[in-house]
Image 1 (tube, one colour):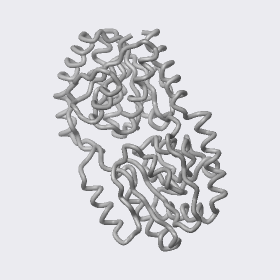
Image 2: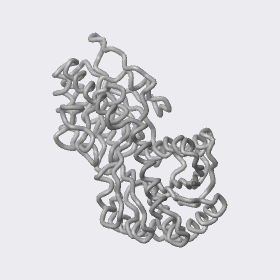
Image 3: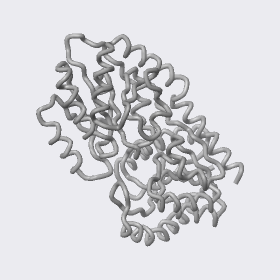
Amino acid sequence: MNILFVDQFPTIGGGQRSMLELLPLVRRRGWKAVVALPRDGALADRVRESGVEVDWVPCGTYTAGSKTIADFASYAREVLPMGNALSSLAAKHRIGLLYVSGPRLLPAAAWLSRRSSIPLVFHCHHRIRQPLAAALAGESLRWARARIIACCRFACEPLAPYARHCRVIYNGVAAPRWSRRGRDPMRPWKIGVIGRVEPEKGQMEFVAAARIVAAEYGNCSFVIAGAPLFSGPEYMNQVRRASRGLPIQFPGWQEDIGPTFSQLDLLVVPSTDFDSTPRVVIEAFAGGVPVLAFPAGGIPEILQDSRIGYLATRQTPEALAARICSVLSRGLRQMREVSDRALTEWQERYTLERFQDEVECAITESAVSA
C-alpha cells in the first residue's frame, strides 16, 4: 500500500515529529510512504534523510491563532488548487491511503477521498478552536467517511460529532539517549521550560512565576529552551524583556534536548488550552524528570497530580509559582518518587513502539473498511 502523508507546515513541531516517527513503521510493513508539504524546509530535509520521497502541495501561510474573515476568504481560493495538486499526487504515486496531519488540507483531501474512494485518516494534534473552522473540518471528515486519530480526548471533542470513527492514541516517545545527572545539593535548583516559544506555550506566565519563586527561593535558576517556529520573533522578544534581572538562560532551539533535560530538577509546562498533550511531558516521564504543568487542554488526561507529576490549581502565574514552591519544599526524595512512577507510566503507556502499533491498527482498519 502506498500512503500519502500530508502536512500543512514545512517546520518541525510536535505533530510533524509524530509523522516522522511513523515513517519507519511504513517501511517495516512493506508499504511505501510519500510526504507532501507546502514548501522546502527542515521537515522536508528530515523526511529525505529517512529515505522517503517528498512532493509538494500548495498551502498558504496564515498567522497563528484565530483567523480573520480575510483569512477564510484567502483560504477558500486555495482549496481547489490544493485538491488538484493532491489528485495529481495520488495518481502519480498510486496512493492507496491519505494520511492528513493538518486541518487546512482536510477539505481538499476529503474531496479527493470521496471522488476516488481513497480512504482518509486525519491525525488531530490540536483542538480546532474556532467554530467555523471546526465545522468545516468536521463536515469534510463526515463527507469523506474519514477516520480520526486524536492525540487526546480534548483535541477530538469538536470533531467527534462528525466522525464515525475516532480513536484516541496518545503520543509515544523513544527511550532517551541521555541520563539525568545527580543533584548536587550545593547548586541552585534548575527549573525550565522546553519547546517552541509561542503564546500558547506560556513562557510569559513562566517568567512571571519565576520572579515570584526567585523572591521566595533564592537558590534557583531558570531555563527557557526553544525558539519561535510558526510565528515571528515578537513574542520571544517580549519574553526576554520580561525576564530582565532574573537568573534565566536562553540557550535557543535545541535539536538534541538531552543536555538541557539532563540538567533540570523540574520541567514546567505552562501551556494554555490551545495546546493538547505536549510531547515534552512524555519525554520528561521517559527521562525521569519531574513535571509541573497547568491543568490545561489534554494535559490532565496524562498527568495525575502528585502521582506522576504536579498540576497547578489554576492557569495563572501566581498559582504556578505557588505550586513550584510547594514542590521544592517537599524535597528531592519526594520528587524522585514521583518521577520514578512517571517513568513506569511511560514504560507501560507512552513508548514509541506502543504508539506505532496503535497507529498501524488504525491505518489497517481504515484500508480494510474502505
